[in-house]
Length: 247
Ligand SMILES: NC(=O)c1ccc[n+]([C@@H]2O[C@H](COP(=O)([O-])OP(=O)(O)OC[C@H]3O[C@@H](n4cnc5c(N)ncnc54)[C@H](O)[C@@H]3O)[C@@H](O)[C@H]2O)c1
Image (tube, rainbow, N blue to C red; front, side):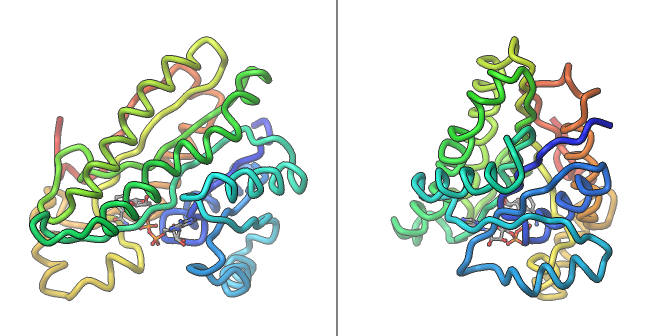
Protein backbone atom coordinates (compact mmCIF):
# COMPACT_ATOMS: atom_id res chain seq x y z
CA UNK A 1 0.00 0.00 0.00
CA UNK A 2 1.24 3.52 -0.80
CA UNK A 3 2.25 5.42 2.32
CA UNK A 4 0.09 8.52 2.76
CA UNK A 5 0.04 11.40 5.22
CA UNK A 6 -3.14 11.25 7.30
CA UNK A 7 -4.38 14.15 9.42
CA UNK A 8 -6.97 13.21 12.06
CA UNK A 9 -8.77 15.81 14.19
CA UNK A 10 -9.99 14.87 17.64
CA UNK A 11 -7.26 12.25 17.38
CA UNK A 12 -6.91 11.62 21.10
CA UNK A 13 -10.61 10.84 21.69
CA UNK A 14 -12.30 7.46 21.44
CA UNK A 15 -12.90 7.24 17.70
CA UNK A 16 -9.87 9.35 16.81
CA UNK A 17 -7.50 6.98 18.58
CA UNK A 18 -8.94 3.96 16.75
CA UNK A 19 -8.72 5.79 13.41
CA UNK A 20 -5.09 6.81 14.04
CA UNK A 21 -4.19 3.22 14.95
CA UNK A 22 -5.94 1.81 11.86
CA UNK A 23 -4.03 4.22 9.60
CA UNK A 24 -0.73 3.45 11.34
CA UNK A 25 -1.34 -0.28 10.80
CA UNK A 26 -1.94 0.51 7.12
CA UNK A 27 1.54 2.05 7.04
CA UNK A 28 0.46 5.69 6.77
CA UNK A 29 2.19 8.56 8.55
CA UNK A 30 -0.35 9.88 11.02
CA UNK A 31 -0.68 13.43 12.30
CA UNK A 32 -2.77 13.44 15.48
CA UNK A 33 -4.47 16.83 15.87
CA UNK A 34 -5.60 17.58 19.42
CA UNK A 35 -6.97 20.38 21.56
CA UNK A 36 -4.37 21.51 24.10
CA UNK A 37 -7.00 22.17 26.78
CA UNK A 38 -9.16 19.07 26.32
CA UNK A 39 -6.56 16.39 25.60
CA UNK A 40 -3.53 15.14 27.51
CA UNK A 41 -0.98 14.65 24.74
CA UNK A 42 1.80 13.17 26.88
CA UNK A 43 -0.47 10.63 28.53
CA UNK A 44 -1.97 9.66 25.15
CA UNK A 45 1.45 9.25 23.56
CA UNK A 46 2.51 7.03 26.47
CA UNK A 47 -0.60 4.86 26.01
CA UNK A 48 0.05 4.66 22.27
CA UNK A 49 3.66 3.70 22.80
CA UNK A 50 2.60 0.96 25.22
CA UNK A 51 0.21 -0.32 22.54
CA UNK A 52 3.04 -0.43 20.01
CA UNK A 53 2.38 2.85 18.15
CA UNK A 54 5.52 4.98 18.29
CA UNK A 55 5.40 7.29 15.30
CA UNK A 56 2.47 9.66 15.72
CA UNK A 57 3.19 13.31 14.95
CA UNK A 58 1.12 15.64 17.17
CA UNK A 59 -0.18 19.13 16.40
CA UNK A 60 -2.34 21.26 18.68
CA UNK A 61 -5.18 23.60 17.75
CA UNK A 62 -8.84 24.49 17.89
CA UNK A 63 -10.93 23.23 14.95
CA UNK A 64 -13.53 25.91 15.66
CA UNK A 65 -10.99 28.67 14.93
CA UNK A 66 -9.81 29.09 11.33
CA UNK A 67 -6.54 30.84 12.19
CA UNK A 68 -5.67 28.02 14.55
CA UNK A 69 -6.45 25.50 11.76
CA UNK A 70 -4.16 27.33 9.33
CA UNK A 71 -1.30 27.14 11.83
CA UNK A 72 -2.07 23.53 12.76
CA UNK A 73 -2.06 22.28 9.15
CA UNK A 74 1.07 24.31 8.32
CA UNK A 75 2.81 22.66 11.28
CA UNK A 76 1.60 19.23 10.13
CA UNK A 77 2.93 19.83 6.61
CA UNK A 78 6.28 20.99 7.98
CA UNK A 79 6.60 17.95 10.26
CA UNK A 80 5.10 15.22 8.05
CA UNK A 81 4.48 16.51 4.52
CA UNK A 82 1.38 17.40 2.48
CA UNK A 83 -1.87 15.95 3.78
CA UNK A 84 -3.34 13.17 1.60
CA UNK A 85 -6.03 11.92 3.99
CA UNK A 86 -8.12 14.17 6.23
CA UNK A 87 -10.50 12.87 8.86
CA UNK A 88 -12.76 15.56 10.31
CA UNK A 89 -13.53 13.76 13.54
CA UNK A 90 -13.39 16.32 16.38
CA UNK A 91 -16.78 16.87 17.92
CA UNK A 92 -18.70 17.76 21.07
CA UNK A 93 -22.22 17.48 22.43
CA UNK A 94 -24.16 20.02 24.49
CA UNK A 95 -27.46 18.19 24.84
CA UNK A 96 -30.62 20.01 25.98
CA UNK A 97 -34.25 19.92 24.91
CA UNK A 98 -34.69 22.80 22.49
CA UNK A 99 -36.98 24.72 24.86
CA UNK A 100 -34.08 24.95 27.32
CA UNK A 101 -31.19 25.16 24.85
CA UNK A 102 -29.06 28.31 25.20
CA UNK A 103 -27.51 30.11 22.25
CA UNK A 104 -23.99 29.29 23.46
CA UNK A 105 -24.83 25.55 23.42
CA UNK A 106 -26.08 25.90 19.83
CA UNK A 107 -23.04 27.93 18.75
CA UNK A 108 -20.46 25.65 20.39
CA UNK A 109 -21.84 22.52 18.72
CA UNK A 110 -22.26 24.12 15.28
CA UNK A 111 -18.78 25.65 15.30
CA UNK A 112 -16.99 22.56 16.62
CA UNK A 113 -18.89 19.93 14.61
CA UNK A 114 -19.72 21.77 11.37
CA UNK A 115 -17.83 25.03 10.86
CA UNK A 116 -14.71 23.04 11.72
CA UNK A 117 -15.15 21.21 8.40
CA UNK A 118 -14.78 24.52 6.57
CA UNK A 119 -11.85 25.56 8.76
CA UNK A 120 -9.79 22.39 8.35
CA UNK A 121 -10.80 21.17 4.88
CA UNK A 122 -10.08 24.63 3.43
CA UNK A 123 -6.41 24.16 4.35
CA UNK A 124 -5.96 20.94 2.37
CA UNK A 125 -8.59 20.31 -0.33
CA UNK A 126 -7.22 22.56 -3.11
CA UNK A 127 -3.72 21.12 -2.63
CA UNK A 128 -5.11 17.56 -2.76
CA UNK A 129 -6.87 18.45 -6.03
CA UNK A 130 -3.64 19.89 -7.46
CA UNK A 131 -1.75 16.70 -6.60
CA UNK A 132 -4.58 14.55 -8.00
CA UNK A 133 -5.18 12.49 -4.87
CA UNK A 134 -7.09 12.99 -1.65
CA UNK A 135 -9.40 11.30 0.81
CA UNK A 136 -11.66 13.42 3.00
CA UNK A 137 -13.66 11.53 5.63
CA UNK A 138 -16.19 13.43 7.72
CA UNK A 139 -17.55 11.89 10.91
CA UNK A 140 -21.29 12.47 11.13
CA UNK A 141 -23.66 10.48 13.39
CA UNK A 142 -26.78 8.36 13.28
CA UNK A 143 -28.41 11.30 15.06
CA UNK A 144 -27.58 13.57 12.14
CA UNK A 145 -29.34 11.11 9.83
CA UNK A 146 -32.47 10.45 11.89
CA UNK A 147 -32.59 13.43 14.30
CA UNK A 148 -32.61 13.01 18.08
CA UNK A 149 -34.69 14.75 20.74
CA UNK A 150 -32.42 16.73 23.05
CA UNK A 151 -29.86 17.19 20.27
CA UNK A 152 -31.28 19.85 17.91
CA UNK A 153 -27.81 21.45 17.79
CA UNK A 154 -25.92 18.18 17.28
CA UNK A 155 -28.44 16.72 14.81
CA UNK A 156 -28.32 19.95 12.76
CA UNK A 157 -24.51 19.98 12.73
CA UNK A 158 -24.19 16.29 11.85
CA UNK A 159 -26.83 16.59 9.09
CA UNK A 160 -24.85 19.60 7.84
CA UNK A 161 -21.76 17.39 7.70
CA UNK A 162 -23.61 15.13 5.24
CA UNK A 163 -24.70 18.05 3.03
CA UNK A 164 -21.16 19.42 2.99
CA UNK A 165 -19.84 15.98 2.08
CA UNK A 166 -22.20 15.61 -0.89
CA UNK A 167 -21.47 19.10 -2.26
CA UNK A 168 -17.68 18.87 -1.95
CA UNK A 169 -17.69 15.34 -3.39
CA UNK A 170 -19.21 16.72 -6.59
CA UNK A 171 -16.74 19.61 -6.76
CA UNK A 172 -13.72 17.32 -6.41
CA UNK A 173 -14.99 14.28 -8.33
CA UNK A 174 -12.69 14.75 -11.33
CA UNK A 175 -9.63 15.52 -9.19
CA UNK A 176 -8.92 12.17 -7.57
CA UNK A 177 -10.25 13.46 -4.28
CA UNK A 178 -13.11 11.56 -2.63
CA UNK A 179 -15.28 12.97 0.13
CA UNK A 180 -17.39 10.65 2.27
CA UNK A 181 -19.23 10.73 5.57
CA UNK A 182 -19.32 8.07 8.26
CA UNK A 183 -22.45 8.01 10.44
CA UNK A 184 -21.74 5.87 13.52
CA UNK A 185 -24.33 4.66 15.98
CA UNK A 186 -23.29 4.25 19.63
CA UNK A 187 -19.60 3.40 19.97
CA UNK A 188 -18.07 1.93 23.12
CA UNK A 189 -15.83 4.90 23.83
CA UNK A 190 -14.98 6.15 27.33
CA UNK A 191 -17.68 8.81 26.94
CA UNK A 192 -20.43 6.32 26.08
CA UNK A 193 -19.27 3.81 28.71
CA UNK A 194 -19.62 6.58 31.32
CA UNK A 195 -23.39 6.74 30.72
CA UNK A 196 -25.35 5.39 33.75
CA UNK A 197 -25.59 1.61 33.48
CA UNK A 198 -29.41 1.42 33.30
CA UNK A 199 -29.55 4.21 30.69
CA UNK A 200 -26.86 2.51 28.62
CA UNK A 201 -28.77 -0.79 28.83
CA UNK A 202 -31.93 0.88 27.55
CA UNK A 203 -29.93 2.31 24.61
CA UNK A 204 -28.39 -1.07 23.79
CA UNK A 205 -31.86 -2.68 23.93
CA UNK A 206 -32.94 -0.45 21.00
CA UNK A 207 -30.02 -1.58 18.81
CA UNK A 208 -30.94 -4.62 16.68
CA UNK A 209 -27.44 -6.08 17.20
CA UNK A 210 -27.82 -5.61 21.00
CA UNK A 211 -24.32 -4.26 21.40
CA UNK A 212 -22.30 -1.08 21.01
CA UNK A 213 -19.87 -0.61 18.14
CA UNK A 214 -16.20 -1.24 18.79
CA UNK A 215 -13.99 1.81 18.07
CA UNK A 216 -11.86 -0.49 15.86
CA UNK A 217 -14.90 -1.02 13.63
CA UNK A 218 -14.85 2.74 12.91
CA UNK A 219 -11.11 2.60 12.29
CA UNK A 220 -11.56 -0.23 9.80
CA UNK A 221 -14.17 1.70 7.82
CA UNK A 222 -11.96 4.80 7.68
CA UNK A 223 -9.07 2.61 6.62
CA UNK A 224 -11.13 1.38 3.67
CA UNK A 225 -12.36 4.87 2.73
CA UNK A 226 -8.76 6.15 2.77
CA UNK A 227 -7.49 3.35 0.56
CA UNK A 228 -6.66 3.61 -3.13
CA UNK A 229 -9.31 1.01 -3.92
CA UNK A 230 -12.04 3.20 -2.42
CA UNK A 231 -11.44 5.63 -5.27
CA UNK A 232 -14.87 5.15 -6.86
CA UNK A 233 -16.84 5.88 -3.68
CA UNK A 234 -17.61 9.55 -3.13
CA UNK A 235 -20.41 11.62 -1.59
CA UNK A 236 -21.57 8.55 0.34
CA UNK A 237 -22.79 8.42 3.91
CA UNK A 238 -21.80 5.10 5.43
CA UNK A 239 -24.22 4.11 8.19
CA UNK A 240 -22.43 1.95 10.75
CA UNK A 241 -24.94 1.57 13.54
CA UNK A 242 -25.75 -2.09 14.25
CA UNK A 243 -29.08 -1.70 12.46
CA UNK A 244 -30.24 1.12 14.77
CA UNK A 245 -31.48 3.19 11.83
CA UNK A 246 -31.92 1.89 8.30
CA UNK A 247 -32.44 4.22 5.35
N1 LIG B 1 -18.92 7.92 20.52
C1 LIG B 1 -20.01 7.72 19.79
O1 LIG B 1 -20.82 6.85 20.09
C2 LIG B 1 -20.24 8.53 18.54
C3 LIG B 1 -21.36 8.24 17.76
C4 LIG B 1 -21.58 8.96 16.59
C5 LIG B 1 -20.70 9.96 16.22
N2 LIG B 1 -19.64 10.25 17.00
C6 LIG B 1 -18.75 11.31 16.54
O2 LIG B 1 -17.44 10.81 16.48
C7 LIG B 1 -16.52 11.87 16.71
C8 LIG B 1 -15.55 11.45 17.81
O3 LIG B 1 -16.30 11.22 19.00
P1 LIG B 1 -15.73 10.44 20.27
O4 LIG B 1 -16.82 9.61 20.79
O5 LIG B 1 -14.43 9.85 19.95
O6 LIG B 1 -15.58 11.68 21.28
P2 LIG B 1 -14.38 12.10 22.22
O7 LIG B 1 -14.94 13.14 23.15
O8 LIG B 1 -13.73 10.89 22.81
O9 LIG B 1 -13.36 12.77 21.20
C9 LIG B 1 -13.59 13.99 20.61
C10 LIG B 1 -12.25 14.69 20.45
O10 LIG B 1 -12.48 15.95 19.79
C11 LIG B 1 -11.64 16.90 20.43
N3 LIG B 1 -12.19 18.25 20.30
C12 LIG B 1 -13.35 18.71 20.82
N4 LIG B 1 -13.48 20.02 20.52
C13 LIG B 1 -12.37 20.38 19.80
C14 LIG B 1 -11.92 21.59 19.22
N5 LIG B 1 -12.63 22.73 19.32
N6 LIG B 1 -10.73 21.59 18.56
C15 LIG B 1 -10.00 20.45 18.45
N7 LIG B 1 -10.38 19.28 18.99
C16 LIG B 1 -11.54 19.25 19.66
C17 LIG B 1 -11.60 16.48 21.89
O11 LIG B 1 -10.49 17.05 22.53
C18 LIG B 1 -11.56 14.97 21.78
O12 LIG B 1 -10.23 14.49 21.73
C19 LIG B 1 -17.34 13.09 17.05
O13 LIG B 1 -17.49 13.90 15.91
C20 LIG B 1 -18.66 12.50 17.48
O14 LIG B 1 -19.72 13.41 17.30
C21 LIG B 1 -19.38 9.56 18.15
